[in-house]
Amino acid sequence: MAGAPANADLSISQKEAPSGAPGATDAARLLQPFRASFRFPDPPKPISAAHDAGIRALRLLSFVRLDLSVSGAPRPDLVAELIANYKYTPSCATGWSSVRGKTIEVSLDAFADALRLPGRPTYRPPPGVYPAALASAAEEFIKVYLPAIVPYGWVDVKLRAVKHGRAHDVDWTELIWGEVTMEMRQLLQNSTTYGCGLIHYGAYLQMLIWFQRPELFRPSMADAPPQKKQGSNGSAVLKENRKRCLEPHMPKNNMMSSNLFEEASKKIDSASVIIDAAAKKFCSASNMIDATSKKIDSASDAASKKLDVATKLMDATSKKIDLASERFDDKFDVATKMMDVTSKKIYLASQRFDDKFDVATKMMDATSKKIDLASQRLDDKFDVATKMMYAASQMMEATSRKLDARAKQLDEKDNNIQAIESLNQALLTKERQSNDELQRARKKLIEALPKFTNARENIAIKRMGELDPIAFANAYRTNVPHADTQINSAILCSKWQAQIANSKWHPFRIVTVDGKPTEILLDDDDKLQKLKKEHGGEIYALVTKALLEINEYNPSGRYPVQELWNCKEDRKATLEEVIQFVLNQSQSHKRKRRSVGWGLS
Image (cartoon, rainbow, N blue to C red; front, side, top):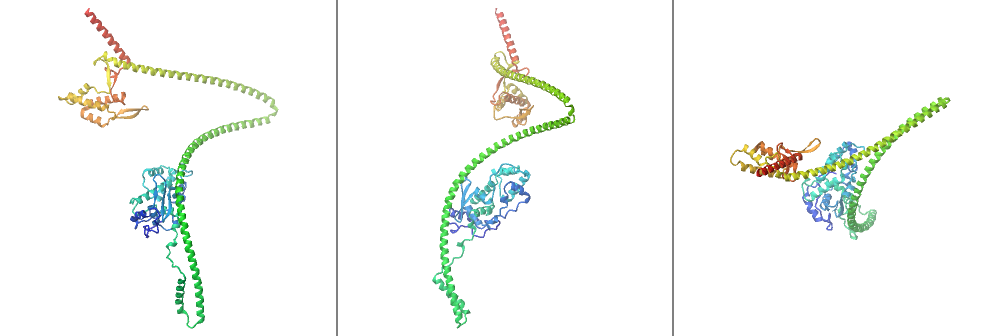
């Protein structure tokens, strides 16, 4: 359905929208800006037959082959009135409008029925159609039938589903309906997004009107020129006119012609009476039709309200049915897979049985032939067969004993495995207990060690993640040799200690080492690079070392943690080293006390 701008006046008159019709005044006001330029676009070019298989698989072939010209010439005036009177609830898929005082249901279901659109998608790839062909057909359909589509939100999700080969998952009816309703709302807001006065989907809306109210597209009797009622005076006027028309053609003093004229006049008079009676009957019938139409309209409004309630209930029921259907489909798929696996196992067992049966059949055939050829040696062969059967039974018994022995061995191995597992569990429990005891011992040693050591001893307590002020000051002094070195180094050390304790700063990245995720320091961190550039590599090394320590010992709290430390080798001290150190210190203290006691004595 194509058309140039409508020539008719698009404003809604009292005849087009009676005072009782909803939104008549609003419709006139909303349609005023589009009075001179409302039009439909040119009809879409037919899709190539090469895409028929894909379009049929998407269940859109009926829509594509729908003849939109069945509703007649383009009627932008009717579509404009439908849009102007459109009333909808954002949370509901059902809306209503009116055209020429006639109620029109503007809903997803009514739109699908009018344009032969498919139902909900099956979410299953259609059989017999390649995914590439399906995607190509879907893209061609969007290009031809959805020219004004804008990829946003859920529309963009559906378009990406088409590009990724999942066109069968798209609800095409919902997609087209969404574009149509969005254009209607844009036009109601007097937006120029879709072009001034151009209704991209106007032909679809005209089809919706025609599907529900085809009488709006038929010529109306009210549009015919009014006829004057003819009574007795009218007959006299007609008679006089006929006389004036016939007199010039009548020969004078001709009685026969006069009689014929009078006879014709009588027939015309009788026909006029019949016409008058028919006109009266037509007027009464017209009045009855008008009354019936009003009753039908009121009944239609009541039925529309009931239909709205029923539609909401059906929508809720449909959602429940869809959920139940999805659950059933999932269970059905699982059952199907289980049945496939079972059928494969049965098929393999059947093949094995067939093979064994074929071998047994061949053996039986060979045995039968041998029996037929050597019937005279039946007794000898029977003895031989008896011996062979006995030997076979002996072999079967031996095999059965071997199998029993192996079964016993397996049982013993199972028992051994269970014993090993229980032993392993016990060892793990003991290991946890030992670790807990070792941790408690380290805590006790950390608490007691300051009594036995000083800053110059090999074994000491180190606060992991804390900058060494002395080392920091020495490193700072090498780079900035002036009088305020000590104060500036203390300020800088305090600043970077606070930065290390800041949990929001985490200059680490995760890499995989030997199959395990490991955190390493970011060499290109802006703060660290700035520190290295301004204060040199020694301070940079001290800060990165403290960062690595805090990330290892307390990454969540980011405060320094005490640890037993081997100062000589610059590593974590073992319990053995710490205990040996404490014993040595204790013995040393004892010798000092003895020497002091001897000196006093």
